[in-house]
Amino acid sequence: MTAALPESHRDLLERPLFAHLATIRPDGGPQSSAMWFDWDGARVRFTHTTTRQKYRNLLSEGRVSFHVQDPEHPYRTLEVRGRVESMDPDPDATFYRRLQARYGMEHPVFDADVRVVIVVAPSTFVAVDGGMTKAEVVALEKLLSNLATDEET
Amino acid sequence: MTAALPESHRDLLERPLFAHLATIRPDGGPQSSAMWFDWDGARVRFTHTTTRQKYRNLLSEGRVSFHVQDPEHPYRTLEVRGRVESMDPDPDATFYRRLQARYGMEHPVFDADVRVVIVVAPSTFVAVDGGMTKAEVVALEKLLSNLATDEET
Image (tube, rainbow over all chains, first blue to last red; front, top):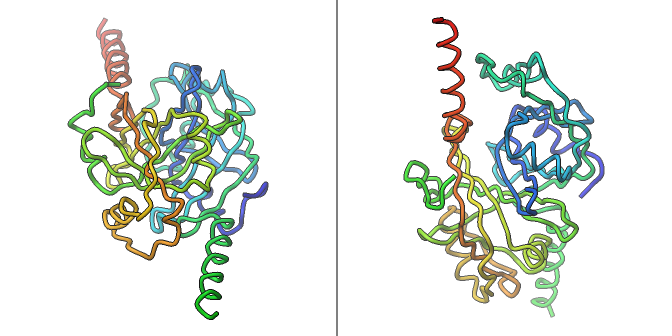
């Protein structure tokens, strides 16, 4: 768990992968969905519309968490926690079209009037390798080392 | 959004895919991570340990949401919302080993003493095709139909 993006997992934000985004509904329960995203080295940006539940969720609770999974190595993931900094209109769908290009799926836009850019400022990064965080690897190594010591004595 | 699992997306729970699980931390913020799971037609089961943050999250807030993404068709997903029904000890790691076999990754278990089975009773299923829920498809079709009518008149 670090305040800066670990170099080892930077590619997961730079590649056009899916953000598995957790938001909180006004009733306090969680919601989960796969989202396109963009990363400029400081902020994460999502495209969305003001007509959907997730927009209402983010109006009432700005804290979000998402993780990105390496498709080639699925036990290598990065969780990003942060807070919505702004939700800005995207009236010409400029940002939406940029994301379409990033994900290789360009198609006509019919909902530019309700499109917004969700800007998230990350606060915490959790890098996972082999299904384990660094803290979990340290704990397992300690356990194995203790087991080895037990066997020797 | 349905109370029963849509037949069209049943395979996403039956195949050994990843659940992208959203839980809520005791401070009210969301947490997001990739999890193995099992589905028996009525309940979703996860393996976890009592030493981790997610366990503490679920003790304080039993509502969860997760989605599963079709690796071959990533815009086809299923969100499942529900509530933790129980968290039962797995002292011989029987359930953990069963999940290892389901995911083709059998390895020694060192933490059976803290392993638990998280049992989730689903309440809502949201099937997504082409990145859209059924309600969103209907809304888009209506919009396109109105556009076509406008052009004709």
